[in-house]
Structures are given as C-alpha cells and as structure tokens.
Image 1 (cartoon, rainbow, N blue to C red):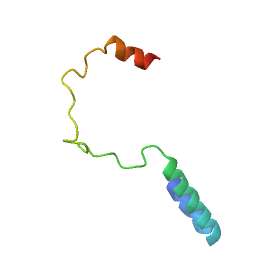
Image 2 (tube, rainbow, N blue to C red):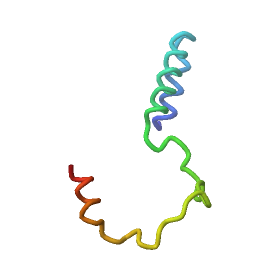
Image 3 (tube, helix red, strand yellow):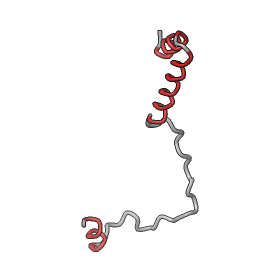
Image 4 (tube, helix red, strand yellow):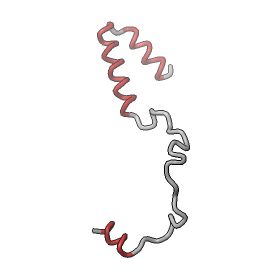
Amino acid sequence: MMTEERIITILRELPPERQTEVLDFAEFLKKRTPGARLPRAYGLCEGEFQVPADFDAPLTESELERFES
C-alpha cells in the first residue's frame, strides 16, 4: 500500500476532531516545504531596469573596499 493510501485509510478511522488536527498539520507542512510554491514566471520585471553592458566587469578598488569592510 502506498503512503498516500495508508494516510487516507488511517485518517478515515480517526474521529472528526483528530482529522482536523491532521489537516492543520498537513497545511503547516505544506507552507514549510521548499518548492511547494509555484515557480515565479520569467520576465516579471521586464522593462523595469536595464543590465549595464559592463555588468561582468571587475569592481573598482573603492567598490571592493565598501564590500569588504
């Protein structure tokens, strides 16, 4: 028997107040599970900013100092 089937079988045997507790716990786990949310769509910020041509250029000494301090 698969896990899902076992859960449903046990859930059906529980009294309603315990079923509510199981539902609350399952919803809690769903919120905490990485990847449970739908992935963000590509292009959400399209047109809001422009990546400069020198994006991959090395930082200047003064910029490096600001990050390292």
